[in-house]
Image (cartoon, rainbow, N blue to C red):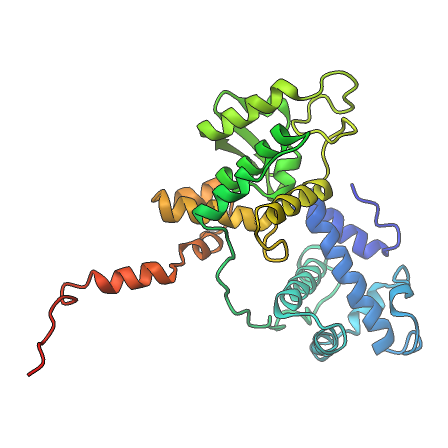
Length: 323
């Protein structure tokens, strides 16, 4: 359990419910807490509990109680959304997440904890999010990235990038891989909501892992079951993996500002769909998406496909000669 000691009991109970009953991951629960902390700091200013010139980031929320919560109206919620938009510069995605956090919290208070009779967030609308095509490396750029790997830890780094590009793993999933979860050509990972799923490893992944295991430290290892180790012989961290990926993206002559570990997940999904002819539902299983709609962003087509589609029209070659 995460320590949320600065939160009042009502929020701690909600966060425990989300983690233990709803199965939300620790990272997701932490995001809920951050969102609610920002929300109640604003409410304390908005309702006059603290001076409007108070240092926002230092406003305590441990005194928030049900009596205060019962005074919050839908109008107050929209005031807060205007605040995070204008004053904090939150984009539509960030605001949509804050709306989701607030709606989830008030729904819990109303339907589960039975602490409030009226849910002011029930009619709270989420900002419209414009769908953007996921950014990804094309096939040649992906090869370019793999060819750029060198140095003292090249076997480890090659295995990391190979798994990202072939399996579409999340960063947290890659970092948490344990040796006992690799069985022949299968790998079991723990994804969002602590859900386990099996990933089938292709020849490139098996070869990369085996090459790394030949040089992986054995003596003095702090976490003996961790697949990927740092130079300190402990489980590699998210931050270190992000640094490794950025380093090789730059060495490959690509833009480190445009590409990240998550963009490699986009790359794997796009390459499987575009070049491997993978069925959308199979892709959903591989990526561990709960909803098919999340996977459908990878069914985008690029300009080359659009041009080819028009060229395949049976009327494409019928040209009227000039008179």
